[in-house]
Image (cartoon, rainbow, N blue to C red; front, top):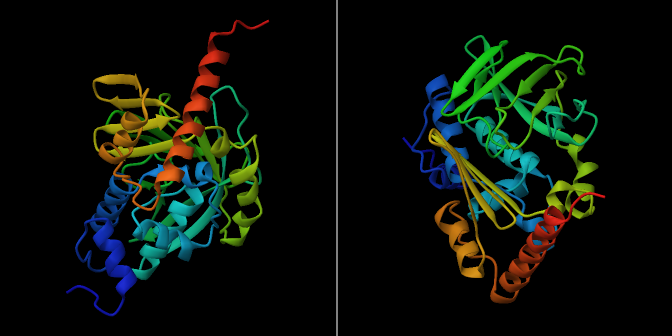
Length: 289
């Protein structure tokens, strides 16, 4: 029976198009994880719009219920809130992001990503719906190689986080990997970094508009005006050269009609994204000195 006593909980499950998942179980956890990454995209559009946000999980839940997404801390914070309300034993962890294969691995104290673990039936599970093109389902927190759709992931002991875990993304992923701190974290551990991530010209969230969505057969990725798909058939890419194409992709590919963005904001957002795209193209064409 649906939990009529909690309006927010039911609204969240409706957003995921999931019925009452029942008592905590591995099949239910997997179904919730799949539904979240498929229906709630990773997106940095609030940053591009210049709208202030926080990493308060309650605000993140409200944003999801309005049909929007967020970046890693916001998405995993919202999902942790949902799982806790459903009775799961959830722990927050800081994780350092390694943006590219040649970059050094990052301890969790630098630009922390939020990762989650869930203790269930005597096994800890890595839960992360905040990578965009990462996990489709939770991974058992055991060293090994795991395939989900076209992507292959690897879990091992971390070299930079004592007692922690290393997650290696598929080489085609948006990041190289994560180093996850073993110690539990809390929302306050991410507050200090949030203003930097949302306002600094050096922040990856500020430099480009990014939208990511995972499904069982691959992932869709929009960076600026370049729309990419990675699936079993390989990688495809196309440029969205008009405002209509760009907003159409947001709605049709990522489920983001942006009903909460008015006409003037839409025009300003497209101008910002397109100008950044043109600048990127110019830099790419200019030979290195």
